[in-house]
Amino acid sequence: MHDIVVRCETILTVDDSRRVLEDGWIAVTGDRIAAIGTGAPPEGRTVIDRPGLIALPGLVDAHSHAGHGLVRAAGDGDGDLWFRICERIYAGPATPSFWRAEADLALLERLMAGVTTAVSLLGGGPDVLRTDTPAAGDAHCAATRDAGLRTVMAVGPGRLPFPRTFGPDGRQVAFRDQLDVSADLIARHDDVLGRGTGVALILPVYAGHHMDDHAAEIRTMSRDIRDLQDRTGVLFTQDGHRGGTIALAAELDLLTPRAALSHSVDLVEADFATLVATGASIIHNPSAIMSILGRCPVPELIEAGVTVCLGSDAGAPDRGFDMFRHMAQAMHYHRRHFRDPNVLPEGKVLEMCTRDAARALGLEAEIGSLEVGKKADIVLLNGRSAHLWPPVMPLNRVTHFAGAADVSTVIVDGRVVLRDRIPQHVSADDILGAAAAEADRVFAACGMADTRREGSETWSAARRTGSGYAPSGSRR
Image (cartoon, rainbow, N blue to C red; front, side, top):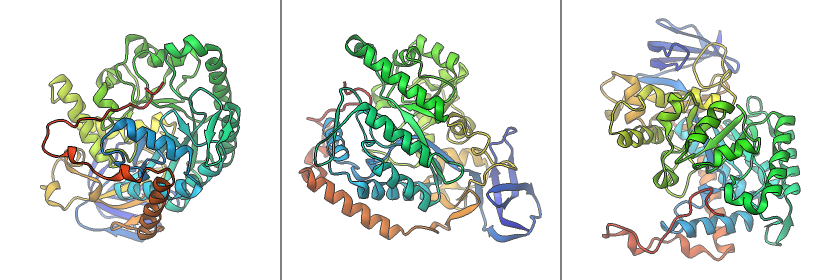
């Protein structure tokens, strides 16, 4: 007898044959998918069966930021102010309790949205990565284990110049200190398919003008990061690439098939050639403000043979972890650019946050599709809703019309973690209360409580005035 048997109206396997099964079932034994079929199901100790269920692989969010969930909307649309808020909080009053409360909140949101695996940078952009001590990373990983999801926590050094200043006591932290903490976190937490916590390495994106003044230091740091990656085999990621910087990252010997690069807007021919030659992947963030300021050439990259997946970019300042939203946004974004509704078909965009994302993270053999022998990471949608009706064309329904609120049940590693929209292993009320208290505390501690109030410029006018935006990776 199987541990779990799920009966579904439709199963979107996203397997090698891209099978779509009607009146199907999935059997789970231990942490693996034991069988998939149609018609009469086998027996199971736990049976999940309700009308209209649509099954799909657990969704993967390949790029986001830890910390952002507690600074949502702060600054009231002023991007420069929002970045200053993040820097001041993350490097100052953000104690381990802050990182734990924010991780709990982010994981709860992901759980309710069917995101079973996510990459989270431990801090804001390239400037503040909280690796002065292991405490923030330990808190983040503890939250992951309690929630029952999978996260890959990206850690590494901040941006030049060093030393960096952290904590209310103004501790001075060198590049080597942050690298040593990152190595320690990798050694103790990197087991995304076991404990559910993985660790990746990150180095800020540097451009040509940085090399003019700091070439020797940047080359040394890059070599140290690459050496640590080679010793540990972890993923390498970077946040905020744009035209020309990918080619420079290759020159710094940072790119391999175990590299995944976010945003990547306004790429040039040398960047395309570099991606093809190195096998590095791209993480597209269609809902990010950086995708307003520039364009990631996703269809062109896919046609060049580059793996491209999707990321939320974070739960702030103006978006969340609903990957259904990001799938729809990606389709409309690139179709509008080409003025062609045939760009980024529905199946491809679903692949981008399932099997393509798993490939980018080096996990394709274990997750990203519903296949016998793979990890039992399964998301069930309630298809009996007015906006998902009539019950035809399930791929179209899921990618254009579904949202996080349609997620009914989530299974991760063969374990039911959400059942009929009720979390099974965490308390939503406790998480929300702790998150609100921590957010209040850190904003008060840095004297920025007023930045959480909405101003009058939101109303009536066609444009907001008096605000600016510094995209991730552009703060030099």
